Length: 213
Image 1 (cartoon, rainbow, N blue to C red):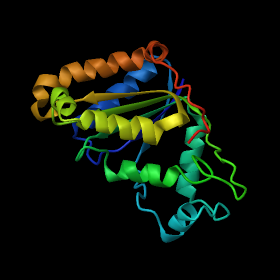
Image 2: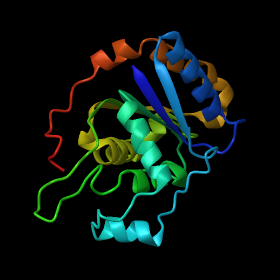
Image 3: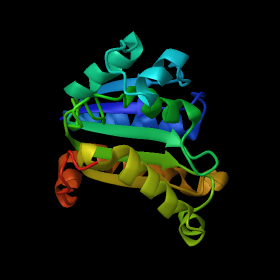
């Protein structure tokens, strides 16, 4: 499987970075091909330019896309699976990751209509979308407060949506007491990476029409 990892964390000293290293190692052990968009390392521009807003806001698909956006489109087209890996900051992904969706999910590619009112989507439907996020609060707290459900709704139902056949979110919570959870979290990620095909086969296909957005 060709797997693209969209990774957003500014520090290589973070636990999230250890998760990335473990995941890449496990996927390679499972004979998967791995490509990484490290958004901080790439200095990916998360803010839309005025021209980009004009293109998106007024559906002016004749305006050109930025080269960095086109590069991400090419990575998407090579992928069978996209993993979004990031820390939870204020109940969401970092601004770099949000900006990736804002700019890469461009009109005419990930959504949109032409001048005749017909839906236009060039983005292929990806087999698997997997969200992995680290969180300071434990999973029970995130579930009880409704934060976990909110994050799932935004990431899986909206941002991934019908663009993916199968999708799942894994929250690695409790990192405020990292010594208690680090080993089990990394073991979980290792098993996931090695057994990615098995994991994929356990998920249910989203049968919603790809163009019903």
